Amino acid sequence: SNAAFDELGATLDCLTEPANKDLLVKLLRYHVVGGTVLSTDLTAGMEIDSLNTDDAWSKYTFRTGSMLSGGAMNATITEADILANNGVVHLIDKVLMPPNFACPATILDVVVKSPNHTTLETLVLRARSTGLET
Image (cartoon, rainbow, N blue to C red; front, side, top):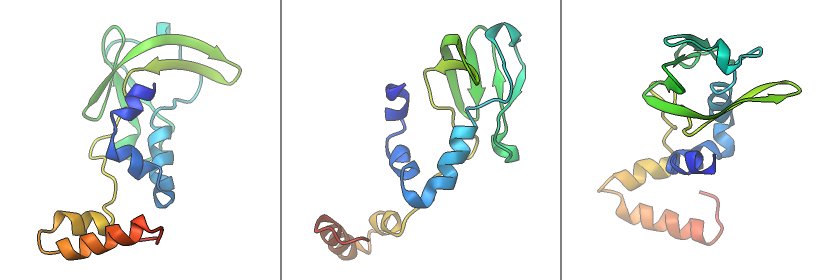
Protein backbone atom coordinates (compact mmCIF):
# COMPACT_ATOMS: atom_id res chain seq x y z
CA SER A 1 0.00 0.00 0.00
CA ASN A 2 1.04 3.61 -0.31
CA ALA A 3 1.04 3.85 3.49
CA ALA A 4 3.52 0.95 3.74
CA PHE A 5 5.91 2.66 1.35
CA ASP A 6 5.42 6.03 3.06
CA GLU A 7 6.66 4.43 6.31
CA LEU A 8 10.03 3.86 4.64
CA GLY A 9 10.75 7.62 4.69
CA ALA A 10 14.34 8.34 3.62
CA THR A 11 14.83 4.70 2.65
CA LEU A 12 12.27 5.15 -0.12
CA ASP A 13 14.20 8.18 -1.38
CA CYS A 14 17.37 6.10 -1.37
CA LEU A 15 15.73 3.24 -3.28
CA THR A 16 14.51 5.56 -6.03
CA GLU A 17 18.00 6.94 -6.73
CA PRO A 18 19.28 5.63 -10.10
CA ALA A 19 22.52 4.51 -8.46
CA ASN A 20 20.53 2.16 -6.18
CA LYS A 21 18.55 0.36 -8.88
CA ASP A 22 20.09 -3.03 -7.99
CA LEU A 23 19.13 -2.57 -4.34
CA LEU A 24 15.54 -1.71 -5.33
CA VAL A 25 15.34 -4.81 -7.54
CA LYS A 26 16.59 -6.95 -4.63
CA LEU A 27 13.95 -5.51 -2.31
CA LEU A 28 11.16 -6.05 -4.84
CA ARG A 29 12.26 -9.65 -5.52
CA TYR A 30 12.20 -10.22 -1.76
CA HIS A 31 8.43 -9.78 -2.01
CA VAL A 32 7.91 -12.27 -4.86
CA VAL A 33 7.62 -16.06 -4.57
CA GLY A 34 7.96 -18.43 -7.51
CA GLY A 35 4.94 -20.53 -8.43
CA THR A 36 1.39 -20.29 -7.20
CA VAL A 37 1.00 -20.18 -3.42
CA LEU A 38 -2.53 -19.75 -2.11
CA SER A 39 -3.27 -18.80 1.48
CA THR A 40 -4.56 -22.34 2.04
CA ASP A 41 -1.04 -23.62 1.19
CA LEU A 42 0.54 -21.66 4.06
CA THR A 43 1.18 -23.27 7.43
CA ALA A 44 2.51 -21.72 10.65
CA GLY A 45 6.30 -21.66 10.78
CA MET A 46 6.62 -22.30 7.04
CA GLU A 47 9.75 -20.72 5.48
CA ILE A 48 9.01 -19.17 2.13
CA ASP A 49 11.69 -18.74 -0.54
CA SER A 50 11.61 -15.43 -2.36
CA LEU A 51 12.90 -14.86 -5.89
CA ASN A 52 15.89 -13.08 -4.42
CA THR A 53 19.00 -15.23 -4.65
CA ASP A 54 21.06 -13.47 -1.97
CA ASP A 55 21.11 -15.78 1.07
CA ALA A 56 20.36 -13.03 3.58
CA TRP A 57 17.44 -11.87 1.45
CA SER A 58 16.03 -15.17 0.27
CA LYS A 59 13.57 -16.28 2.95
CA TYR A 60 10.81 -15.03 5.14
CA THR A 61 8.51 -16.93 7.46
CA PHE A 62 4.76 -17.37 7.55
CA ARG A 63 3.76 -17.08 11.20
CA THR A 64 0.21 -17.76 12.30
CA GLY A 65 -3.08 -16.51 10.94
CA SER A 66 -2.03 -13.87 8.45
CA MET A 67 1.39 -12.77 9.74
CA LEU A 68 4.60 -12.78 7.70
CA SER A 69 8.00 -12.14 9.18
CA GLY A 70 10.97 -10.94 7.16
CA GLY A 71 14.12 -9.71 8.85
CA ALA A 72 13.07 -7.44 11.70
CA MET A 73 9.73 -6.66 10.06
CA ASN A 74 6.34 -8.25 10.52
CA ALA A 75 3.51 -7.75 8.05
CA THR A 76 -0.13 -8.74 8.02
CA ILE A 77 -1.80 -10.12 4.93
CA THR A 78 -4.68 -7.71 4.37
CA GLU A 79 -6.11 -9.40 1.30
CA ALA A 80 -5.24 -12.91 0.13
CA ASP A 81 -5.57 -15.01 -3.01
CA ILE A 82 -6.00 -12.32 -5.64
CA LEU A 83 -5.63 -14.38 -8.80
CA ALA A 84 -3.78 -12.92 -11.79
CA ASN A 85 -2.89 -14.49 -15.13
CA ASN A 86 0.74 -14.88 -14.02
CA GLY A 87 0.37 -15.76 -10.33
CA VAL A 88 -1.31 -14.91 -7.06
CA VAL A 89 -1.13 -11.65 -5.11
CA HIS A 90 -1.36 -11.39 -1.33
CA LEU A 91 -1.52 -7.76 -0.18
CA ILE A 92 0.40 -6.92 3.00
CA ASP A 93 0.45 -3.84 5.20
CA LYS A 94 4.24 -3.38 5.47
CA VAL A 95 7.25 -3.43 3.21
CA LEU A 96 9.29 -6.41 4.41
CA MET A 97 12.90 -5.42 4.96
CA PRO A 98 15.57 -8.12 4.87
CA PRO A 99 17.94 -8.48 7.82
CA ASN A 100 20.73 -5.88 7.90
CA PHE A 101 19.12 -3.78 5.16
CA ALA A 102 20.76 -0.41 4.71
CA CYS A 103 20.93 2.07 1.90
CA PRO A 104 24.46 3.12 1.03
CA ALA A 105 25.45 6.51 2.39
CA THR A 106 26.06 9.30 -0.09
CA ILE A 107 28.85 11.80 0.28
CA LEU A 108 26.25 14.34 1.36
CA ASP A 109 25.00 11.92 4.06
CA VAL A 110 28.53 11.71 5.46
CA VAL A 111 29.00 15.49 5.33
CA VAL A 112 25.65 16.19 7.02
CA LYS A 113 26.52 13.85 9.91
CA SER A 114 29.89 15.54 10.44
CA PRO A 115 29.93 18.48 12.87
CA ASN A 116 33.21 19.59 11.25
CA HIS A 117 31.80 20.14 7.76
CA THR A 118 28.81 22.44 8.21
CA THR A 119 30.24 25.01 5.75
CA LEU A 120 30.69 22.32 3.09
CA GLU A 121 27.16 21.08 3.81
CA THR A 122 25.75 24.58 3.30
CA LEU A 123 27.64 25.02 0.03
CA VAL A 124 26.57 21.63 -1.32
CA LEU A 125 22.93 22.20 -0.41
CA ARG A 126 23.03 25.70 -1.94
CA ALA A 127 24.56 24.27 -5.14
CA ARG A 128 21.87 21.57 -5.25
CA SER A 129 19.09 24.14 -4.81
CA THR A 130 20.33 25.95 -7.93
CA GLY A 131 20.06 22.76 -9.97
CA LEU A 132 23.71 21.74 -9.85
CA GLU A 133 24.14 17.97 -9.55
CA THR A 134 25.94 17.07 -6.33
